[in-house]
Structure formats: structure tokens, C-alpha cells
Image (cartoon, rainbow, N blue to C red; front, side, top):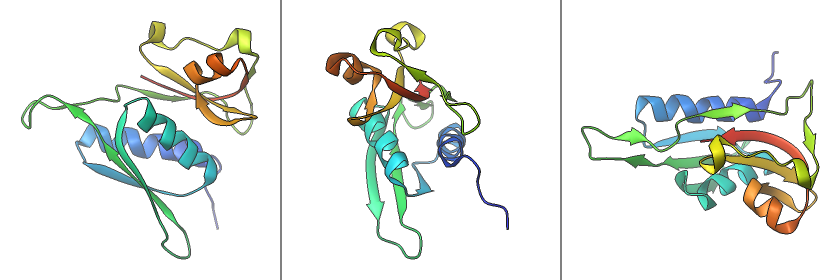
Length: 136
């Protein structure tokens, strides 16, 4: 049986593929970390809605994607997603080294002692952590 070695990367790929195809929503297997990332994406305005289903045996996270423009020429709000810290190579930063993504146009998502937060929230709370991904 082959499992997914990097569930966060799988989630980001599913979101990118769904937005490139113009889907209105995407479903990913749930975990606390992935739910945290999805909630940060919602708070920062990259996705419309995040909903947790209680499906058994595996709960799911439904993410409603956001687009700009009208029906014919709509573009996904998420232009890119990049996994930074990987299972084989974790990337940690102190509060002074939190990266700026696309000169502030994008966000870095960090896993901190206070939970999963955006780079802006981490700077405000003056804490560093593991850089999970970039979204722009």
C-alpha cells in the first residue's frame, strides 16, 4: 500500500489543479494542519469558504475557490502555490527572517507555537516557525 508521503503538498497540488481547471470547489482529506492552512487562505482572501465534513472513515475539507472577472473571462485568485518545508527538509525561520512573498502581494503560511498563521500574523505576534508554503 502506498500512502501520500507529503499530505500538505498533495493539498496544494489539488487546489492548484482545481483552480486551473475552473472548478468551484476542491475536496481534500482532513487534518488539523491542512485545516489550518485552508483557514489562513480564507482569512487572507484567497478562497471563498472552508468547510469540514464529518465523513467516515476519513473526514474531508471542502474549499470553495475564488475567481476574478465574469463567467467567460474568470481567472483564479490563486496564481501560484509553492511548498517550502518538506518532510525531508524542514525550513524554520526566526521572527526576523520571515520571508516576504512577491513583495507582499502573496503570503507565507507558517506553523508556529500559536498555530498555523500567515506571515503578517506571525510578524504581528513577533514569532517565527516552520515555513509551510507560499501562496500568491
